[in-house]
Image 1: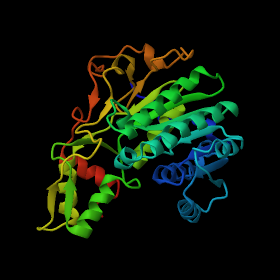
Image 2 (image 1 turned 30 degrees about the vertical axis):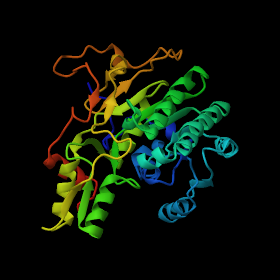
Image 3 (image 1 turned 90 degrees about the vertical axis):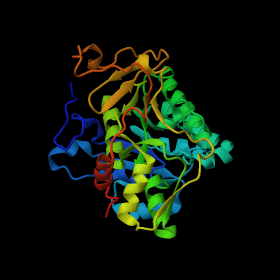
Length: 358
């Protein structure tokens, strides 16, 4: 089974974006830039895809200025504000919002470990503010962007994002006007502060790479595919689900060796420094507790249904499909970054697709 897609790979029937107003929290970051780029792509035969207005809500003044200079599009509005501030959130949400893409978060694991109260204010209180405001102004659909670190969390970042997921899913019990759902991703290549640009900078600056462990594995996907997951969930979501991309995973050492081969020289070295505070050896995308609620959609996605009764029992056509054994292999345990490991050749191609091997 596969979901019907248009020729550029997007789900069909995304006509609900036409004439809509979209609010993107944390929208001046890497995810927001790519999301806006894809929303505004020229598709003459698919003009229904393009919204009428896109509101970028973030506290990054310089990032907003850079974004204005980059896009130069009158359909984009820029609002300085913080998700921690309920008044600023209400002001942004009162502008006739149809869709919210919630990207704003404190994401750096050591920073959240050292400043847990700040992580709570942004990732939990900020999400609460947005949920309440979305309900108040009867937003059509609210999509929260979460992380694999929210699953079986051992660090403050993961814990706060896990609570954020629960707040968003539970919000479906509070209203019938707004559909709340989540997507869950791994490491997105090339986002601000992410691993690949950091390792390249280490090679260029110090001619060495520091790794926490040679055995460490991580899920990776390109930013373009991350946004496609966002669109897929927006199209298919009915409220209460968490969408998970079937991402490839890799040994971090393989990543380091590819980057050294491309950017380094014979004297570039790898130093093993040990795990940082709150860092896992392997990440988990779907926990063992979520397995009974998980459905396989196609080769790209899983969907996790809510563990609480949201009052929305009507879900998707794939619930009723009879899957052949060679097509559908149901999960019988948690899905970790040790379960979908790919080789260096696959990783090399992924880095090329993400334009990191120049």
